[in-house]
Image (cartoon, rainbow, N blue to C red):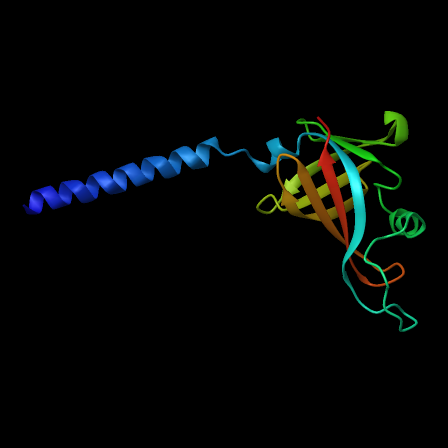
Length: 158
């Protein structure tokens, strides 16, 4: 009887281990999920401190003027679409799909930090908050208008 119970336990753990390995190996990596073209949908404040003059912002949505002020010193300035290539390059495109800049990207940490390199000099980092087959959400820190975390949401272009 003891031999049967041991066999059942061994069979159960072997089956559970095989299912776990199957799930881990069949899951898409963040690099694979990121590859493709993403279109900006919205810029919003995720977390906002009070502005410098003491007023709080009335809206979490970032206006086009403020968006351009925030993005002025960023590599991604005025990019409507981001095309991630599997070889680690990123094409930033404006309206009409005209390429603005070409830079390098890589994921750091557990795949939750997106690093962008431009001309091997400028480096920017973004936290990947959400990455699915259809949606990408990035956070980055800003001190324009109000200190806080800005959120950029993208939808995948099919």
